[in-house]
Structure formats: structure tokens, C-alpha cells
Length: 206
Length: 206
Image (cartoon, rainbow over all chains, first blue to last red):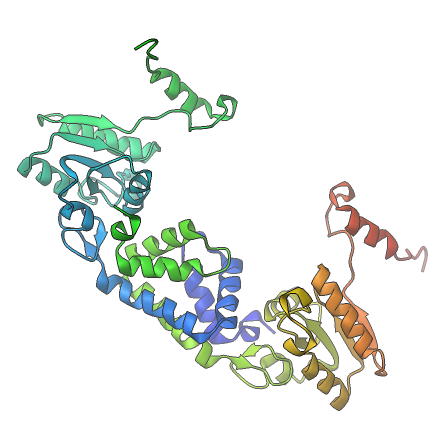
């Protein structure tokens, strides 16, 4: 008897649907589906409703391109934030990560991807056109490029630096170096090399 | 600005709902929700439908208590299986794991839990009454106890052995020992002690 018959079709369908999520394999999907089945039907219904309403409630902010239920989004609409700085990130999750630090009070621009010629993702496939439009029409003083320090993230940053060079704005990039609290002997050689290259002066008796 | 305002409410709702799944923390839930949002709305709808139909399609098999869309379930209805052996497991997922081995051709009984006095789970809270009814009414020759070799799994096995001793049936228990392919120096001392205690004779020139 195959496992297709042992597992009820309705359960199999949920397992298959859950397996399509990133980082969720067949075993995890089975565990999650069985857990949902053991819990009250109201829990499954709540999750189903949340899923069903997700796309209809959320759109892209027409300014920064982040996911939002309002347009402009809460960040773009916040008068207390500094609209003269635009922090360019790859994804809305990067915006959330930066917001969590409470260390940035400017605006954002979400690219929704990185340049990756092998995957067929060129400048037209990500929100670069929209970024250029903002810089041209607005009073932007600084563009702070906060793409990842991965190969495609760095390539995207280089491309943006080339494209933005002509504008009379300050261009900055997220610093690379040793993570806070890390013993340097555990840092990889590339990070360590970057941290040495980017070493900063220490002020004695300032 | 709190993260509640940065994350759109519809997304926050899905993240919260996903976080209630076992082994899914806030970070994983956020990653999953953002992935669902980036994918076509049809994917979210499929997952929502699968969730919505789960509980209505699936019930417990009235014989073995496993999750099934039919009653009796596919295993109980299969005439080629040996109905005189009942394998007692904790959860439907254990049945699936045993079926995958292709090494068992009898019937099952799902307890839907283990005895755990500290959590208030006594014999009445799991499907022991139903197991006793099957043994009393049926022509059962063997009860094969396949609860986990954890403390509550062993306690449940001991309790079942006590309760089933009066019946004229064979009582068996899943073997404990060194996992296949494991170097014994990596086995924990309890497993190794159990493997020594349960050592079997090797037949020379049988």
C-alpha cells in the first residue's frame, strides 16, 4: 500500500501546499499539517482567512515600494522622518530589520530583488526606475545603499553607484566588518580582510 | 515607530497565525509570510483552501483511530492485512513512519497521546478504552506496543502491559538498541546499556 492511500487526500493536499514554502520539506510539512489537524478547527480557519485576505489587503507603497495596506505607507507618511535620505534595500524584510534597530530615521526604497544576470534579472526587473524617478523629482540629499554584502548585493550596489554618480547627492553604503561580539578568530577571511581595509581611527583624548 | 505600524496588519495577522505552528518562531513566520506575499495569489488561495477543508474532510477511523477520510480507514479496510496483530502507536505520524518501512502488515491502534500525569493526561484522555474494546470483541492474537522509548512512551507501554496481561494474547514491544550504521562510541550510555541487555544470540552454522 503506497503512502498516498495511508495519508488522507485532504491531509496530503495540505502537506503538498505547505511543502512549497521556503525551507519547509516534506517532513516538516507533515508535522505542521498533523499539528493543525489536532488543533481546533478555528485555528485552521484563522490561518486560512489570514492567507485569503493577504493579497487583497496589501499593495506596494507608490513611493518606497514596500508592502503596505495604505498608500503612502506608514514610513513615507510619517512627517517626523527625514525624507532627504533614502535607504535602498533588497526586500521589505530588510526594511523591517533596519527598523528594529531604531537607528535610522530616513525613508526607504525597496528594490524587490537584486541584479542577477544568470537568473535573467536586470535593472528593468527590479525597482531601479522608480528610485531614479524619486531622486530626479525630490529633494534627496543622500542615498544610503543597504543591499546585502553578497555577490549579487554588491553587484547591485556597484550598479546603483554608477547610475547615481551624476546626481548632486551623497552616496553611502552599509559598513562591512566583524559582527558585534564576535571573536575575530571565528570571522571568515573575507569579512576580516574587509574589516581591516575599512579600519577607522580611534580618537584618544578627543 | 513600533514594528506594528511598519508591518501591514494583514501581514501581521498571517505572521501571528503562522507563529502558532510548532517550531515556527517569529522570524520564520515573517519569512514564510513575505514569501507567500511575493508569490501569485493563487498559491495563497490553494493553501487557504487546503486548510479550510482539512477538518471537514478528515475524521477518526472508528476502529484504529487514525486520521482518515473514510471509515474504516484504508489500512483497516485492506483485506490483505493481518487483523490479528494490532500495533499500538502514539500518533498517526507514527503509523506513517512504520508504513514507510514496508516491514509491517498488521493493523494499528492510535492512542493520540501518551500518559503524562504532570500534564493531566491519564488513561481516560487517550484512546486506551477503545483499544481494550477491540481486544475484547475481536480475534486479536498479538498487541505490538510501539510507543516511543521516551519516559512518557515507556510509562504508557508499562501501563498497557499491566492492563493487557490478563488477555490470552501475545504482547510485544518495539526493540531498543544501537541505531543502524551508528558507531557504538557515539551511542548514548542508556541506549548502549539497553542494547547490551537486549543482546541476541548469533547462530553459527544454523
